[in-house]
Image (cartoon, rainbow, N blue to C red):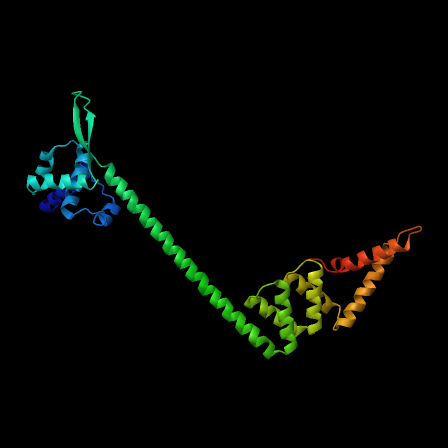
Length: 281
């Protein structure tokens, strides 16, 4: 038990010391991309030690001895790597004034490395964007094919399953909407043709166009209104409309004298607006 406790204490001490010594942070982008930047494995090791020296000593002074102490490579190889990194514009040497000695000192500058990393990052983001655009276009093409397939299936099957007249009604809706109907829209219109006489579905579409309310919910409301009033033919619908128009005209009949032209103009205006008053969204 004593030995185990001592071992446990030693591990805890190691953990505290490990945290106290700190860490050297290396960007994953650098580790993933250094070869595409033209940096060799040996040059990468030198770069990592430079990053460590900067993190540990807060200095990038040009002192080859510091690298020699950290690496097992010969000094000549380290010097060659440093020169190659400078040739590749990854590493540069700058001059600064030392705060203590007030003398010029040479330091390594890693701005070239960060510039190249920024270019790699931008290229990756651009490639990701282009890939997403291609995938988005492929998705749109797939959805378009699915829609066209459903549309073609609905357009071809609906007239055959119901009648040629229902197919003409279907085409009338496409012509008024100025586009192919979606599968859901097609199924809704075909259900109307099953529940109502075809002539009433076509009439409801005509009224919707006249009222400038070209949407399926408005048309459905008209059909439901006729169904509640038990109107089963176009003739019955027209009779109901005429009765409504007469009542409206009587209710708005002006007092006093009026010219025949004025009366005719108001009648025409009432005729144009009668459906808007009868059916509201």
